Image 1: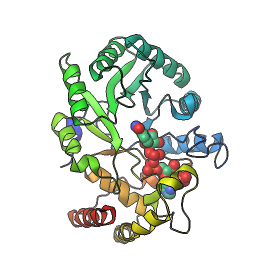
Image 2: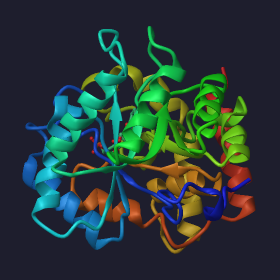
Image 3: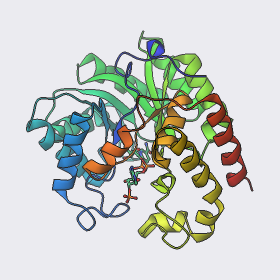
Image 4: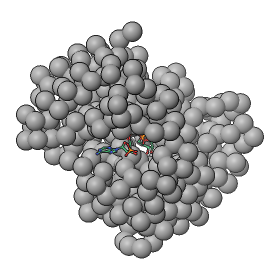
Length: 313
Ligand SMILES: NC(=O)c1ccc[n+]([C@@H]2O[C@H](COP(=O)([O-])OP(=O)(O)OC[C@H]3O[C@@H](n4cnc5c(N)ncnc54)[C@H](OP(=O)(O)O)[C@@H]3O)[C@@H](O)[C@H]2O)c1
């Protein structure tokens, strides 16, 4: 079931896809400063504007604030035409509403903005309750510092508590950002996606390319470097080859779309909003090629079947 745009929070209505900025400043996982530099990211940002990308997703923790600072610089260089989503990390030493407002103001300073479009709780970490953080979000809304409230990595029951706390005050929970791609369909299978659609919450799909794997450029002989290589080893890359073959076959049937474009279109056809990461303009341009066309029901059924097969066991 697709989520129609009308059911979405106004901040996300009519936004089919965003771009993720985790790698913008992150050295450890993504190799910022070694494999790509600020100019590549500025070019990626400009490519977002040129290609009609309406949403960029970042977080205070990405590159320890570097992602937000870079976006702030890029935004100042031109007229703002893109919505910004960022995230609050409820570290265990952050013990009250005040800590969220303080962190939010620090994010706004780095972004050089008076308000963000979407503010998300990054993870449902203890010790404070979901309800407490939603009350802090209501204060941020009241203060005009944010336009909409989101959560991330929340399971169904945590999401329901967040939704109930906000709706009690007449506020709609805009989104739940969770991992969702052809190699990880947990949120589809455990009912979270359906639950989001019933409540008008947009499921924002992170790692929609399975950290680059669904582009098909990594193979058993050419695994990704660094921490990604540990998660996605040679054996795993071998196991998923039939899915990559099918992505390419279906892409060829759609006027030469790439495997990544087919994988992103699959996420959108499921009713979720993908935010593929991009380290340069070329990746932004390629990923926006997932827009403006649609996989058939037959394509979807075939991808579902092969994804089940390659991820079984
Ligand atoms: N809320 C959370 O806890 C959470 C967790 C993870 C991510 N996120 C968000 O979701 C966004 C996306 O997730 P992600 O970055 O983990 O993974 P992803 O979108 O699945 O993959 C992004 C990576 O794939 C490669 N790539 C992208 N487009 C490509 C293309 N067209 N062709 C070939 N390779 C391409 C790039 O890395 P290489 O070129 O190095 O392969 C890129 O950094 C993040 O930026 C972040 O905003 C949120």
